[in-house]
Length: 240
Image (cartoon, rainbow, N blue to C red; front, side):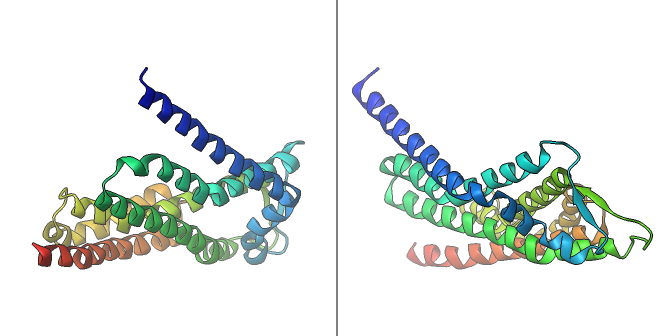
């Protein structure tokens, strides 16, 4: 093993330690507020479902471990900038200046869009979904929702919408690297529109509202990716 490889391994270990340390610091700071964090996540259900609805724990250990799991995920999200920064510090020395510029833009855009996707889901999708469900609950029915299943439902929707909001970045990269031409991407709009509804039907809960609330933004984000590709390709063509 040569000296350069050893130095790289030492640097990698340093970055991994800093990533783990950042996560642990945030997790320890948030741990006393685990229940409050879960209550914050439960606001859409408690606000828009009938007043007779209750979140219940079906396992003895659930009141402790479910908020703990959520707190760990929140700590991971808060630690993402540190994680990305440590990865960047490790790989940046081996990149050319244009590659660094492109990678920085992609990282910032991806992170911002992912957070926007989660925000959109929390403030728009969840209230609309629970309000929609409440219209089909008969007055004599008491809805009891397991806190673990509720957490899994919300987190899965967060992940779905967070990933869906990455569409502009994906479209831009496909066009940027010549995998998909701008003209071809514009011509397949109608197929993309139908495909958005198919994808939404597969990944979302089986109700029309949540499927539509994913499909429409997904298509609009596709158009945003096309627009970004047009704008950012124009200066490159002018410099040729």
